[in-house]
Amino acid sequence: MNFQLTEEHEMIRKMVRDFARNEVAPTAAERDEEERFDREIFDKMAELGLTGIPWPEEYGGIGSDYLAYCIAVEELSRVCASTGVTLSAHTSLAGWPIYKFGSEEQKQKYLRPMAQGEKIGGYGLTEPGSGSDAGGMKTTARLEGDHYILNGSKIFITNGGIADIYVVFALTDPSSKHKGTTAFIVEADFEGFSVGKKEKKLGIRSSPTTEIIFENCKVPVENVLGEVGEGFKVAMMTLDGGRNGIAAQAVGIAQGALDASVEYAKERVQFGKPIASQQGIGFKLADMATSIEASRLLTYQAAWLESAGLPYGKESAMSKLLAGDTAMKVTTDAVQIFGGYGYTKDYPVERFMRDAKITQIYEGTQEIQRLVISRMLTK
Ligand code: CAA
Image (cartoon, rainbow, N blue to C red; front, side, top):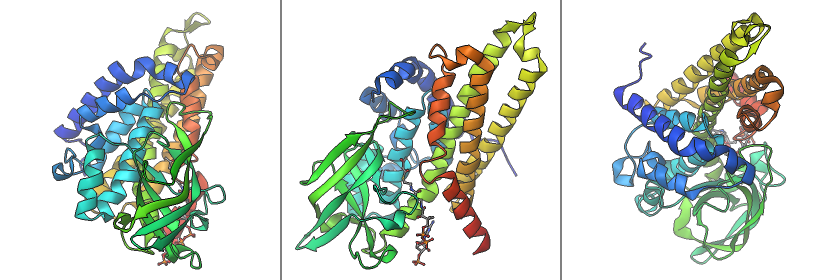
């Protein structure tokens, strides 16, 4: 077993870490406050090749792997979880299914500009009445000549309103739940497509989350992604990898909170000595670091499995479960270490704590991860 990252992984980590510190961190608090997405940051990520890390060069990517992608999401999230999830949803939720199930034409038309960062990707599965029960969707797609006509709406869409291309799921046969679901590639300027309500959120506030609406939305038949009736599997397989991206985001958030806590605990003097040298705080820091390392290892393992072409769905669900809970616990402890100051916006730990919560909810709640893992153990 070799736990050493390759030179390429180390190089990508250093590049993203420098970029995150110099270009993303300085405005993170302000963008959070203003709930503002910054397209310039995305464009700069594109210049560095971050918007297409795992995709081959023939599709506009840099031909690296899922581990490199996770490292990038982690390093971005270490300073700004919103930027981390923008890249994660773009890559694993929109890029991945097109790479995996798309025709050569679809890959050239959609994956290439996404990989090059000219276009942003989004993913539409959740509906007002179907969150955890993804198979309970109501959005329909009716075939009319050479188009499908989509009707319905999707909510809680990461990159909603800023995405140019959405991978969307709809019922082509409403009488049969899973087997009647089909995946589509929908362009934001298709007739009948619109962006609805933008959510006001607790955390990841500079990553826009919106409703997307289909009102007789005309989608050409050539935009069916994969086979008609196989969409539920496309959705599930996409989430298998996507969950690991969220685990990487959670590891980054937790690491960011630990970095800030260590720095603060070394400087903050109470009872005549730095609080870092007082056992109550020192032990807390030790526990935080230990659970982050365990989460990181599981996250990297799942990414490595996927890159090696081995099964990774269980490990990916496990990594999100562990890393999401770690992020919540570590960031809560970080606020505790900072005491009253941690509860204010003078320090970043309150933002990390707000951002951490979503990692226990999206791309399947922690309860759904347990369901996925237990089903895989017993099937
Ligand atoms: N890979 C391939 N096929 C899969 C699969 C997988 N991982 N999981 C299920 N399937 C297949 C099954 O084999 C089955 O196929 P057959 O009909 O041929 O037997 C079919 O799909 C139905 O499977 P289930 O009976 O297991 O389906 P279910 O209705 O019990 O649901 C579930 C399973 C795991 C609970 C699923 O509904 C689920 O994942 N729910 C959570 C949804 C979720 O994660 N939403 C996140 C939204 S995206 C998001 O959050 C993005 C963001 O903001 C960043």
